[in-house]
Length: 144
Image (cartoon, rainbow, N blue to C red; front, side, top):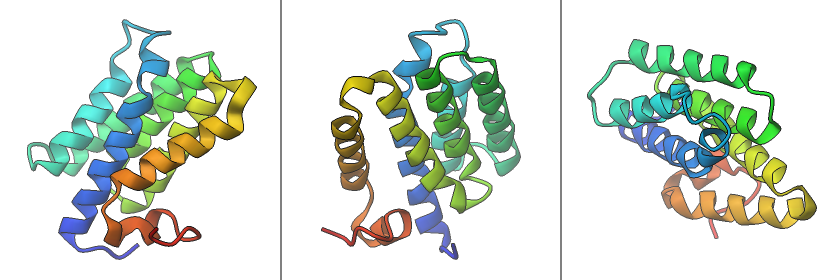
């Protein structure tokens, strides 16, 4: 993607919000492991200009390590969402991955109704994203 700084920060904020939305799927299983939470916080802090890219990137790598340590699919996906959210500070292309992993977390947590859970999560994500960025994260959907 080739975004200006404001749009990059808006996309990073959206990615952090997507990850935070599913973070309970990790924290309920691993309440003492705060690496994914720290990654979401780093993403938000980068948007506010409180941390640099390198600090956000370190938090992203730690969240991905937490994902590798997890043995529950929903928890793993939630930690990966957090990792990609923080990594969006470095490269804006990570934002859609944060959203995709958030969907994976939800569908793994509700396997009996995965289609409905996926649709509900994607709709929530779509509504959170500024209209002018919707085609960036959802190229096939338009901007309802």
